[in-house]
Length: 308
Image (cartoon, rainbow, N blue to C red; front, side, top):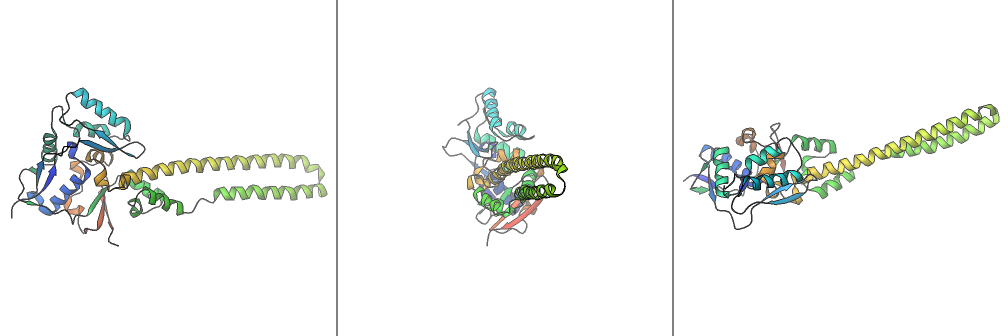
């Protein structure tokens, strides 16, 4: 029957994330006999799709042939670092995965798949059909925490930023601002009643009443200002967290694996060849219409069906 494998276009840094997901599917289907056949890339200018610190996709052009010097290579790394979200693995991953000076896309791709992942690179007898492959989405512990803090399901997080905004808007707003406003109105009513009774029963208490009125109104206004400031800041933090979550899982409303580069995923999702969830566990029980959510930091895998 021949060796089962994949035909992949040679790309700097492993290409986009789809290539890795397909290779993991290949390992699931073919095991140790899996093989990668690399072909020359298209004539298009190579680029990296990355996410900036605000959660938006940007393209970083790469040299069409190879880096001419270490200075040119380091300059591109600094440009990427100035725009990408910070993290402990970002610079290390960029320096490790970007091609060496003078290294072509074919040479860089061969080194990545063969040396780093230990795959056999060569001619393929039969090509793997990836049409029935479940979609794989990688997530970090920080993003998974955002899902919990926003009070949403992972299925919502996979439907894009606009859906998330609508979903969050449907959740009940805090009652604290309204209660604070009602408290101020009730305090004024109580003060009016108290003043009337003091005039009838104990005029000597008017001085104490005036101090109570000033202190009470000031305390309520201070609390209302603090409340407004808190929820204004909270709204900004929530919107920022929502944007990062949505763009990381479905950047520009596209599948994650098609819109960001493997280099970005390695850096921000803490992917590492030695820390990949075992491929036979990754796809276990998953169907073609399923999305497999994988957190390599914790080893937690979740299945979401899109068949309904």
